[in-house]
Image 1 (cartoon, rainbow, N blue to C red):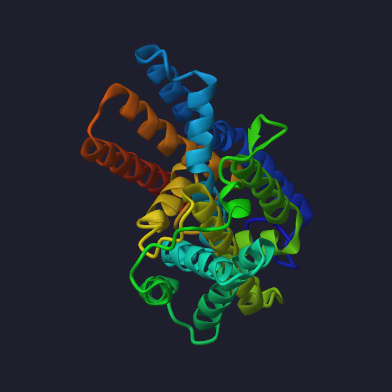
Image 2 (cartoon, one colour):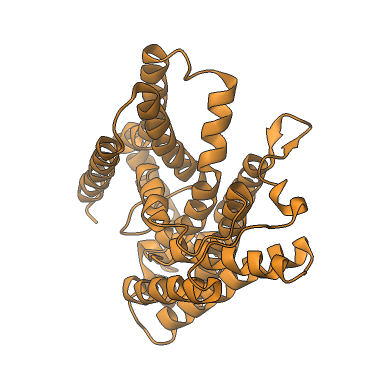
Length: 339
């Protein structure tokens, strides 16, 4: 199956090949521009801030940027799976709070750290399954389902934590946040890289990834080609939920607390990272590499603005403007392709 649209069984291979070659001649440079634009913007941002602040390109600052964005990047990668299939998950930010609180409470109760981490990830996975079943079985819009779950998960986090921050976590867990592999690479950054590599392989080399792109391009054609759309769409939400759970555990390790109000607006940051990186909210387009670039665009922008003393309010305005530009770019791109 193609990564875009399932091929009609009566179509001519020769005709399709000719069309593909024609598309490459007519629009290959535009596709290349679309893919390279986010990376070019990231490079331009980095060069601008390096010229304005000598502290920007220091090893400590670059490492700080990578650590700060690691949680958002992991969540955004999960969000990309759903967006590629023309869905959306607004519950991932609240899931970060709920899974972090769950892991913290289990550790406070005396459970081993690996057990608590596994429980946090599994909780995110189960909520992702819940989202997926409501979308595929009850035929509810993913926007409405995950908006409701966003409120439920946030409320459960507050109830479980009794409206207070959970501190005093075991040293074996709190040491994970600042821990560096071989005294060089922060563990959280390494986790982000491993997740990105695995997610890229899944999206580009497995049936789940191919069907995700196919569903995002034309879900009805995908269904008519014999694909169990409900099953694979549910699996995409499961992946998204599991990565949100992992992000919640990472956030707890980074901050050394289980915070029921944590993860605020993380869902919007995750969606923004995917969109800035080239994913289309209409589905059928997106990549893990692009999402990582989008996440780093926001991180570099915030970090550079902090170094230059730009007020947080103006940072929000700049990021919001970039998101609008990215969506407008996608709209024009889809219009050009006739979607």
